[in-house]
Image (tube, rainbow, N blue to C red; front, side):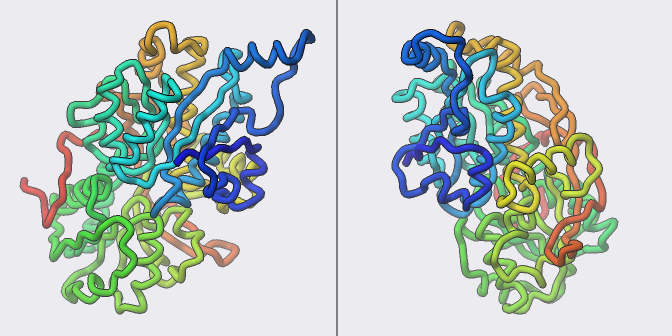
Length: 437
């Protein structure tokens, strides 16, 4: 399903974003002008000038998981893209930007179907997306079949996307799920004193990476795993899992996200969890903490790790980003989510690289653009970014705790920073205990 929109960034913040995107519609384009009108023209026939502008527009395909468990995150990701476009005046090197946004549902089959539509029917040379881990793995595989198309990841975190036979035309401007949890493992043992845990996660690529990254460091630090629980993406009933958790543990490591995270946290206390919770990277991020679910008692005190800093963290550029988000989207979340930050980073990196090649991508099948992307180094809101030989970003990871904010709501505070976390050397598959040494 394709959705058609042409809305200003401020309008996107003034109503529920799902409604602004017109989720019941059957096609979406964004003219890149954000509904703010066309650039001024220097006289001449208006219709002729419009035709010239349209002929010179730069069309970018985008795929976002606006359906399913991560719809709220995808909606906030759209805000991040609007922020990047706003910085560039919705054009690059004089070329107006138009995006064609395809809605996905987090499944590999759907994301490839949407990508094929963008390439074969819409003729795009650039695709930004997707959100979810298994989507990223599938899209990177598809990228190998269309080497003239440049792919820039939006927020997916599966390790194999850029580690296992990576596509030369696929770029990821954020670290992966295993990197996001790598420092949390030893921290849980050495700082929190959690020597024995169970894990709970969804059974697909991204949580495999999350659990693998956590257990690799946790077990190396002397931690033990009593049991692992795997559930389907979209699971809503955690009563049987919670009833099966053994008593002789110190904490529960939970790598759920989106509506799954809300459902689990809402049920945790009622179904008898009385152990501390260690969070994966999206268990207690902004879209979950701002939800209407009854998560407060379970979420408070949860310690988690991720690539996006807490709202008040003293990270160069982050406070400016938070302030701009709040100004542009007064009815959005209180603070930019994990997804807003990562969508922004990927799309801004793309715009910076396009600027380097004067907006030209058609003449050389995108080779100059991909070279510029590979060489790009820039200061993002979450820290300095550059790509390694796999076209994969590396960087810092933030450990934080859920606390009560000044307004009585839930927020997070920084506890520690894992600096310069490298890309792992192995792809973590589904684990049922400590990884083999």
